[in-house]
Length: 208
Ligand SMILES: Nc1ncnc2c1ncn2[C@@H]1O[C@H](COP(=O)(O)OP(=O)(O)OP(=O)(O)O)[C@@H](O)[C@H]1O
Ligand SMILES: Nc1nc2c(ncn2[C@@H]2O[C@H](COP(=O)(O)O)[C@@H](O)[C@H]2O)c(=O)[nH]1
Ligand SMILES: [Mg+2]
Image (cartoon, rainbow, N blue to C red; front, side):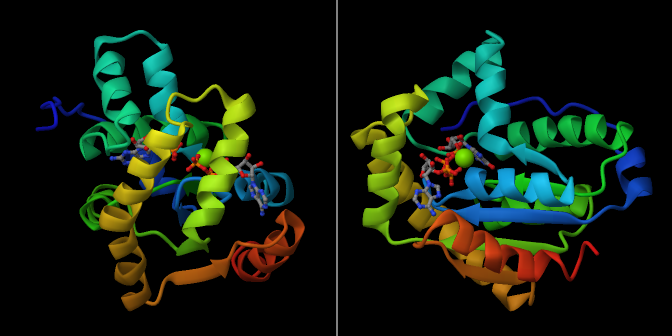
């Protein structure tokens, strides 16, 4: 049973006023979301918010909530969606104050209801980029990254759990946004440059 989490009252008026494009970046653990987001930020100057990184920062802060979160993350499970939504809202407001041109919400949403709640409370996403990679490739990449990442969830056991969580909770997200005509599915098995070439074909249409 996920711990109950009190909601913060966050005024997102500045976000609605800015009305900049929001791109959800979806894909399994190790699918290359962070890698591609780095390229996208360099070319388009967008704000990159990784829900996983925001959670890891909360854990690093040493807060009581952070202690609760780290247990869930080490188990490869999903943390309470309200926690992530509030962290993302706070981060987006900071970026809008700096004149953000648009957002990459990396690793989000993980569940259909999470995406629906985001779009109800903030605004609809413009596009959902889905990086499609075979499971064995995901495991191989995460294990390779584990050599240097120091992430608590980069180990064989947790990777398997995260994959299971992704297949169960997050693959329905892909169908959900495909039905809305917002999904762009990108084969992310190949090299970083090749994938980024395809990414640009889609983003050039939004960000002139
Ligand atoms: N196209 C690619 N080919 C080979 N390796 C890649 C590719 N893209 C990323 N990688 C490597 O795979 C690992 C995972 O990439 P990255 O961290 O970008 O994935 P992610 O989707 O953000 O993962 P997570 O959801 O676990 O944060 C990294 O070590 C990265 O260098
Ligand atoms: N319920 C949610 N849990 C999330 C979300 N984004 C991340 N997480 C948790 O963090 C780890 C690491 O995420 P990663 O993207 O860096 O791999 C993940 O396994 C979850 O426990 C989210 O949007 N919702
Ligand atoms: Mg990542």
